[in-house]
Length: 96
Image (tube, rainbow, N blue to C red; front, side, top):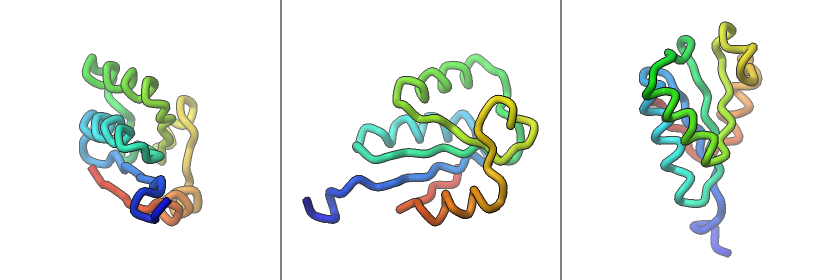
């Protein structure tokens, strides 16, 4: 298998628009790459749109993480070192 077809690790940082980041992350899985999602900047709002997008994440096998301490009881928490490791391990990073 050539490098062009090799599985890539894509990291989506949900910074400005959590709902859009969830949609993008779920959509990227159709290319056969591994996709990680990190919620940042604040807790994810409890809205019908976000609930539907959370279901998409479950269907695609994406297990989100967070840098938001207020969400640490719901999702795996990434401290600065963990986030740096995730960024370094990714082939591409999308900030949404």
